[in-house]
Length: 351
Ligand code: AN7
Image (cartoon, rainbow, N blue to C red; front, side, top):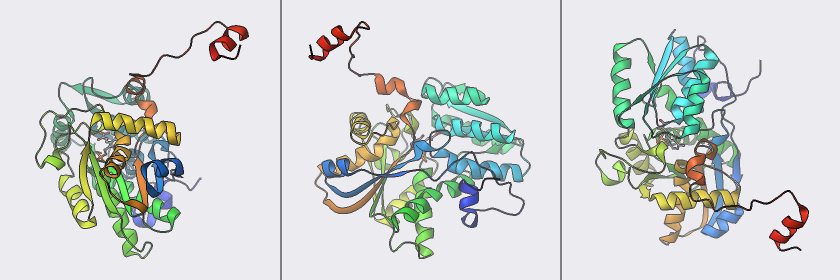
């Protein structure tokens, strides 16, 4: 059996017992890409992108899902359930399929990217769309999983956080130390919670000399932590983080305060500009929500933060291929020509 994946690689750091089944769809061990061109443009020392879109279902959710599903199997659960803005449901559906479990997913109608819905459909999940947003969907699945023998696999499930913290381990394992700053999008706030837990654990084990300042970014129309109150009708082009009342609000605030970091917001225009910058300067196609991290870095640099000597990691949480509709919305037209060399030379100005 191949011994790769989050469960095998970080077994000693996870809540694994002799009864926990170990398996992998190939999650974790994602690239940490150094991007000098972007670093120069933004004016920071060293800039690395953690490409979580390279996970098997195209987002960071797989790290936590593999642990949550392994524990569900250990507890003899037959079905898992989640609310989702899309990526959690895609991941839950895939791991359920691999493990012969039923995946039941509840998503906000019309507000999840088509690629994510396609994944859930193709992996064979039971899909319910509700006339409501993510926060309402989460409330519903909390009630349902309280009442019925179905395992909740949203990040309220602590095993999700345990799995997701392994991304911090990988960053330190590769860089040899923690970065000065970690920039990360914030939606339901599980991931910033998980990264902070991972950084603290490695620091306490002496594997890093410091802990990064945690720099979380919400979308302007869905920024409850920034405003200090829930947002009843969150709106943003970054549908993955269209969340008005994050489940891990307290933990995210603690990560911010303990690390000396911040949680701020970026506009949809800043998110889309960062998505484009990421693609055209680094060759990385991230989905809009995932570009909120880079948008945050650009924002602080423009505000005059001196980042010249800093090592920075931006977490690119999901692949842009899930949401091509948004990416192509304002794309310029391209040349359409006959299959003829002369015509093409003329169009290119070569003839
Ligand atoms: C690409 O899939 O909440 O702050 O239901 O898909 O841990 O919620 C997704 C969230 C960032 C925010 N980037 O992470 C869901 C869901 C991407 C995401 C986030 C999400 P959290």
